[in-house]
Image (cartoon, rainbow, N blue to C red):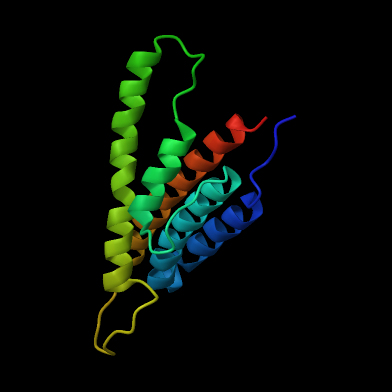
Length: 148
């Protein structure tokens, strides 16, 4: 029997929260997108009993989680080619945390801003939410598959 990700309910709740905030509160959606990635990575590392610095930023956490997960199944045909392709896709996904952190710092929740600051539109929040959800779910599902 496959064990479920300890915080799968929390991850699903965060995705729902982000999606609900997209139209009315894009800044909250963007801030939550960054938090989702951070929580997912920390949970994976905790469950694998791996340590990380309390000062680690989100890109560092994604890199550590990806390394811990080894992300390519050993039993697929032509592991080398699949590994190269997956690494390339993960490299692209790996840039998501950088972008989310920058968006959050500039436009998301978590930092005080001038009352005159204009935020991003819902379409920008949708981009952040979609990217974060894709990465978090992929990491979570990979972690679940590896559980005894």
